[in-house]
Amino acid sequence: RSRVDDGAVIPAIAADGSFFPIGKLRAHREGLQHLAVSVFVFAGDHLLIQRRAASKYHCALQWANTCCTHPYWNEPVDEAARRRLVEELGVTVPLELGGIIEYCAAVTDGLTENERVHVFMGSADRAELKISPNPDEVCEVRWALPADLRREAAACPSAFAPWFRIYLTRWDELGI
Image (cartoon, rainbow, N blue to C red; front, side):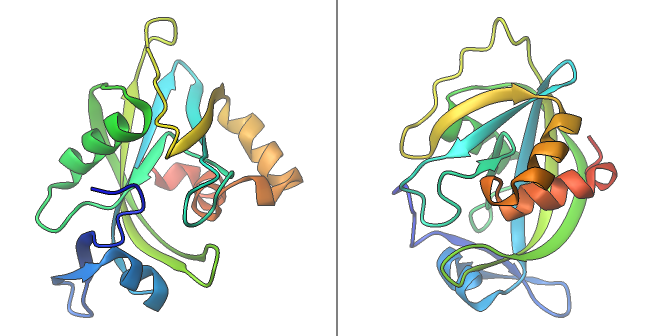
């Protein structure tokens, strides 16, 4: 699949709670609620975060959690989380499902993230974890304490992806 993956088909959520397939960009253009996955990898109290590549179609060069994605149609959310961790950062760590959180946020270029997010957490040994960021997806990574990230996001919100700012303010709901 391509980096932008315009043709990706993901699960959208109907008013009755059922799922139906939709193109990823259509879901974002129309602000339709859909499934998503967010991964948080920790080394002790430090969270691995990434700065999105300059070529990303939205929220380029903004800091975000370890990685995010949308499951493909009929792809289990846990498989999507593991897949994207490898695709973006070249790492594999055991993941556990935390919470499920919903949010709606304007991103860039008139797109909207209206998501029901399955949150996954993993733990890693910082000294042993060999991170190989995909330059089409990630331009920088770093480890940070969540409290420091909250202060940074408050001081310079535009440096952080909208969903990550939401996560930082709703931390207790993430189940991590």
